[in-house]
Image (cartoon, rainbow, N blue to C red; front, top):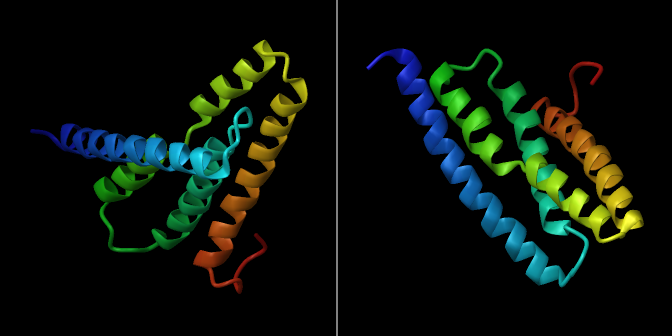
Length: 133
């Protein structure tokens, strides 16, 4: 089996794991919060995924972690975990239900919080000390 197939297999396994984690966390948060309309569980998963991908991207710089394992974690696990496809569907459903303010809150909240989450991941990985970002 070639390196591409091995890497693809690891990414696929990571994606399956990430998807299961996304479902469990988003559903659990949604139940815990009791939000009927607003997809707070999906938003939280997206923010956490962005923090993690920002953190890992910095920690992997110059590390001995193999490219296969880096891709399995970022493209696989976090790609399956972060849910912008679910985010889009949730937003469109809110629009179809004429819940326009909730749809706008979901778009703005998700984008802004995920960008801040990615920035936070960078800062945590760098110990809040290095670089302009």
